[in-house]
Image (cartoon, rainbow over all chains, first blue to last red):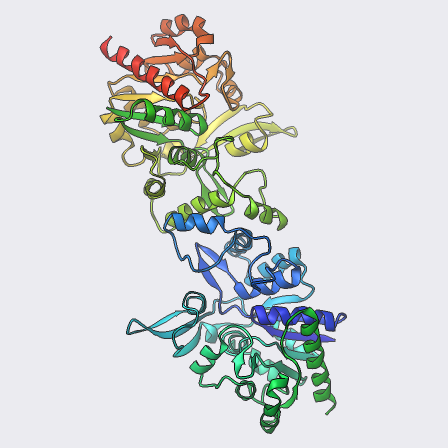
Amino acid sequence: MRIVVLAGGIGGARFLRGLKQAAQDADVTVIGNTGDDIHLFGLKVCPDLDTVMYTLGGGINEEQGWGRSDETFHLKEELAAYGVGPDWFGLGDRDFATHIVRTQMLGAGFPLSAVTEALCDRWQPGVRLIPMTDDRVETHVAVELDGERKAIHFQEYWVRLRASVPAQAVVPVGAEQAKPAPGVLEAIGEADVILFPPSNPVVSVGTILAVPGIREAIADAGVPVVGLSPIVGDAPVRGMADKVLAAVGVESTAAAVAEHYGSGLLDGWLVDTVDAASVERVEAAGIRCRAVPLMMTDVDAAARMAGEALTLAEEVRTA
Amino acid sequence: MRIVVLAGGIGGARFLRGLKQAAQDADVTVIGNTGDDIHLFGLKVCPDLDTVMYTLGGGINEEQGWGRSDETFHLKEELAAYGVGPDWFGLGDRDFATHIVRTQMLGAGFPLSAVTEALCDRWQPGVRLIPMTDDRVETHVAVELDGERKAIHFQEYWVRLRASVPAQAVVPVGAEQAKPAPGVLEAIGEADVILFPPSNPVVSVGTILAVPGIREAIADAGVPVVGLSPIVGDAPVRGMADKVLAAVGVESTAAAVAEHYGSGLLDGWLVDTVDAASVERVEAAGIRCRAVPLMMTDVDAAARMAGEALTLAEEVRTA
């Protein structure tokens, strides 16, 4: 079975770890979000790709969900001592190596997809990880700060400001001109199932879908497309998805997110058992829906969620 | 009193720490060797400038004489795990920050002299540290490896090979086209005393003197020029100076090094007490010479050496 997954960071990575356990013989291709990539200290940092790579490759800091295990922050401390910023982005000493290797390879002319493949040679994530695009896409968030309207980098909004001010708009700058990375459309075209993990529907999955050709390829793939709600009981399971959902006019409920994707894209949708009441509304929107436990408390729980998603996909296929 | 010092790495840095103690009111300008600078992982590394800066600024690893105190090597370990080299150059996590800041500033268009000044704003070395040039000079060493004659970077010869094969030639590539950095010739022109610490006469002091204009400015300065022998009892005090002295046809003795600099450049020369017998030979070459203890076992010993050098300079001045 060939499975394509559109993944953001922590939620996507943890779901994928469950999926690998639930479908051990499956051939999994992950299309990773690069909209929250950022240049720091002259280095290209790809937080979502790295979170997937580290999580599946056994190098993740389990507690925080991002960054490396057994990490130190000496380099960052020294940069601060030099007065060189920004200081709000948590780059660890081990993590820096990934960004240095990536930046060196990009500088040598390799596209990000080839660089990602090379990095994965070490981590052996057990999936094929492809960035959504080799082109530069950078998610900006429009906010009002000190009475002025500004567009700031998504990481500045998310990490520095902790989404503490309303997002007035979320714009994946460069997405319109971007092309899917080599292998993205092919993987979608050959997939048996396409999954949207409980990643952020705006700044993770939404950014991937904003790359021209990807949404269309998924809609036209003719295979079940099943998603899992990142909202449980009207609140994001983790992160601050509600902040960016508000920016695109979507209420922070499991049903509203399904409707936001729409029946033209989504065939099946899993909501948490606490949101069982919304199943009817989702199905009324033409999307098959089931209520199952959606809290990824551990790998087994994530595996059960992945299993439910595949079961729902099978229901869609044979319906 | 305005003192100009031509410095390499460890020997120069430790001598300077002694000089600061011996001449606390002096205005010291250090002209630093950049011939052993190297690009690693896309970063500009200036080992000699950093050794001076860290040593005088209190950040040096005292035992090894280079690199940072309280250092870790996680980034380097990770680069090796990615299979990215070279692995023989000891870049620590804290040290990396210096190279990142430097590389960023160079990339922004600042010359190395301005970058060095900015880095010293943090370290407050208590001297004015100027690279010998803002231009790229790279010391290469001609060696025979596996039956083939090759020119390799000085660091590869020194650090990777530990000078284990004979150096057939030492070439400061780019020196002929280099210009002294801003402030270098002015500092020499305004100096009351010019000192050559017990740094390597070929790859440290020699490289600085290879930048057109510097040797001439020192010879024409009309002030005492006093050096300290890096060779004690026919062997280098530290490092492998004998290997590169052989490449330029100079025997590894305190007297031969003085003759190598020559009376056209050098007015005074300090040899160690074990080399007292060579005083006569040095003086026969027209260079005033004294035998004093030259082992920098601690800061006080280095300060006594610096004091002896200043005393000899005064003798030269009043002779």
